[in-house]
Length: 122
Image (cartoon, rainbow, N blue to C red; front, side, top):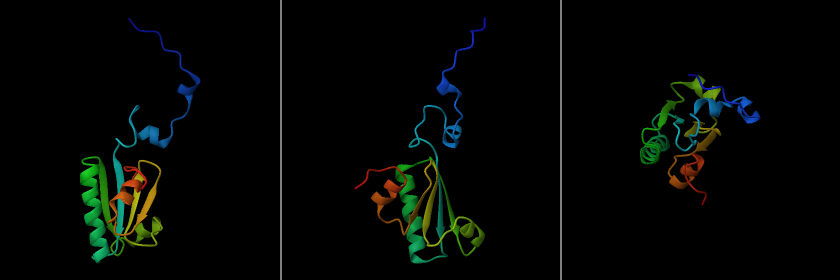
């Protein structure tokens, strides 16, 4: 036997936002997958430090829950232009919202964690 359809509340009829469409119901953004883009300039010391630091932070705090792409602005200048990158290294957190940009070598773990919504403000 079929159960009768449930009556929906007015809140049930609202249109879903992008974040709600991408995340399963009941999940929290801290549990979802992080989409990160790190823009670097060739093999400079700051770029190498930024890559090393963000990989370490991701492995410690987002193990198997992140998608990190490192983009060299010399090899893909069109991507840097599209993202309006004005300084490197720049880390962009695309997902979960809100979009955030972190500039520098990412050596201050507390600031990076705060920028990624993974830590408390100092």
